Amino acid sequence: MVLLSGCSTEKTIVAKEGKQMVEEFYKDLMDADCFTMESYRDGTLSGVFTKDGDKMYVNSVEAGYDYYLFVQDGKKYLISDDRTLFEDESMYDLSLQTLNTTLRMNALAYYEGDDDSVTCKATNKNDSELTLNVTAANGNSSESFTSTGTKENGKVSKIVSEFKNGDSSMNMEYRFVYDQHVELPEYNAPKTYNDLPHVESPCRTFGEIADSLREGGTVDYTFIENEIFVIGEKDGRHYQFSSTIEPDILEKYNSLDVADENYADQVNELLHGVQIDDCVDFTDEILPQEELDAYTGKTIQSFIDDGFEVSGYAFWEDGSMILVQKDLLTYRVDVKVPDGFDVEAGHEYDELNDFEILGTEFDSVEYAALPMR
Image 1 (cartoon, rainbow, N blue to C red):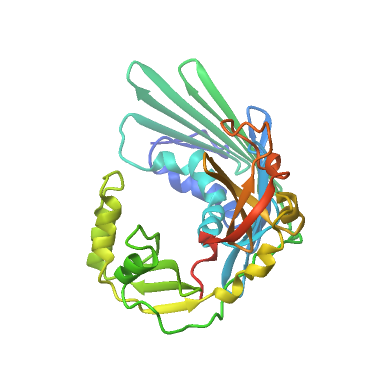
Image 2: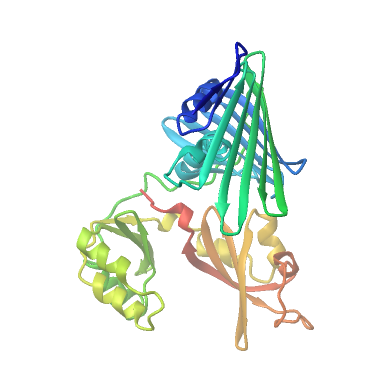
């Protein structure tokens, strides 16, 4: 249904065909490559998104953090709120859809589907203002959505939306500025574990790892797509064992119930005969034991001063330990609990800085360090 008002430039479409008019109005915005979008919820700034070619800046004002994204040498990176660099393809791709997601929520999504209870009316005034009115029946009540896009100098400068459901409503506003650029801040690149020595594996199968390295105990398996990785120790050397898993075994693994009390045994049985394809010796990346022993008698603060971070703790009747992490490697620190310290209460990590160190040893590899190559 198309309504034309005399010779005016106002055009209204009450039908699915209105999608084309909406797409044409927002086309230049969808194609924009250097812009900033500010988002307001009920009049309060909630977020800022800037795109500058393959660089992006995201400031989640409501959540209180921000991050940057960029591409270098074909790899996608994220600079986190504490200015640490991570290779992160999924977050980059998700952020890249920010504008498309906003336009779908405020215009295009209402033209999808075949729900006859939804009515869309789009009105274009002189290609400088486009208003979309959407109504939908919802039981005994009705829902309505209205968005108005405004152009200045031929470019979309603002979108104002209101959603109503009964007596409740929410207002969103998006403001656009063009020719914006992103300057990447200084960042700390975490240590990577590439170009490590590949050696002959001391174990032939993953079953041998479970039987010999942990004396039949549970082995922690890490899956990355169709590859399996296990960190283990043998005769004083530390290894990353890995293999490519056949599709049928991977399917069986994914079908196991993690809540089953026999889950660990089922995993070990399933993977017991899998041959180890590759073995990386990363022993020399771990701090030497003599360096770790030098911390004995000092406090956890000495680790903090040397660039470590506390990542966990546990208190038992027969001992207490604190986990510290540096360069994506975690070390277990046996500690003496100060007199009067309440081990039953929850504590912030900085409350542990005065604990006396009794001994330290390597514990584990952080997931972010995998796979070592």
